[in-house]
Length: 279
Length: 236
Image (cartoon, rainbow over all chains, first blue to last red; front, side):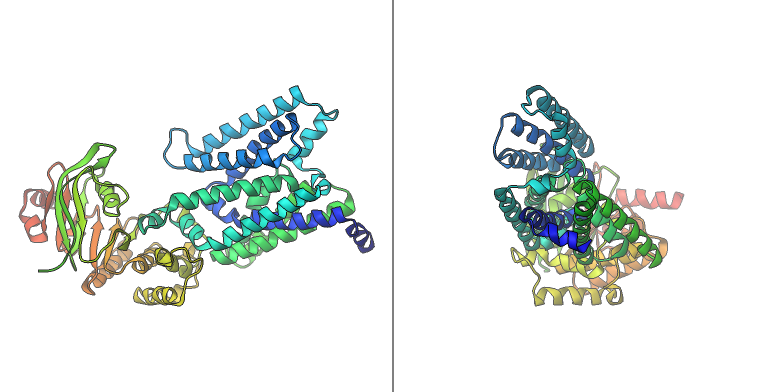
């Protein structure tokens, strides 16, 4: 079995996939804690549907580099959605549901009506579930993924204390002169970038799992923000690697295997948390 | 004459030209213990926002003296739902009070960590500092948030309903703690439902209603609003 794995690792595209997979898993787990605690778990889901819609538009107009369109649209939606979290007529969760289902519908509609591809359902399926797209990344896509991940990591580390404060207590942060609006904006942009990146790995339907599972698992066991953040990053990378290896060896779809590994890890953490007397 | 830290003259407070409180005048001096009482919806929260500089007054003025800037008010907000299951240690939360001092620097420096350590010690929660916030009792959580407020500013504290949801023992404990802080020279502004405690602990009372009252506790007890309150207490 190991031999088979080393064989596969000799292919550059497999190595690319693993590098990109690890980076994406790392980034997506970082903001999980913030999203879960700010009650924004579903924002990932909503945004991924927006990204799907944008992806559909990009394929219809036949853009060579779809990121050019998908990234800005998702970033703008993220900023708008996080803004509705504050006082507006349509509440945050309703706004997310509304935007996500309509972009899903329009995306599929566009693909159906204008698609030039012979294998329409295959295209839709791979956008939704990721299928093998991580293995078919072109080299500039790999470069872009690496660059964006590094930026996300850097921004997160640089603003770690601010993100903590804004997540824990927005009112206090505001009262002591922290620019809460600015940091919420930064959080929104990071989330959007992560979503677009993660679409390559697990497809748009499974992204929320990648974002929230590691955080939820870590929260079962650990008791400080730092420990939760570090552990969820480690766990996420571990599950991504495990999922990718299993999918290479057993020929299962990459995205769903990774998410299955995340879900399994969550149950293990639940049991471990119970055993340690922390419920 | 003590230094006046906050002076409010003929202020009208409210949102987008809809006044909530009118004709508000009061002054807070160094070392005062001001209790702001009033019915729900009378404008207490609006006043808090205005004092914190988050919501400018519609007219009139609110001045800060004695070297107090708007970011130098230690604020103890009401607890939010998010905080109830937040995985953060006491140390992390108290340290986050130093955030505004750290500016753009991504990490806290030694002086800020020392401030956090001192304030944890001051509130007697040193043995809790590695504990998780959500595992603490309501009273302990309030102490943690108070320590954080002290990290942000140690001259003036603004407490928004500090005893909400606490049991009677923890409530008495909290009032005693606030009194100790006040005796050590920190100015206290407390928003409260609990007029009984206000009369017991505060040096000054600001009663927000259709008719605003501001004065010392003794004056309040003689005033019409104060008498009305005392009669209500007696009638219960």
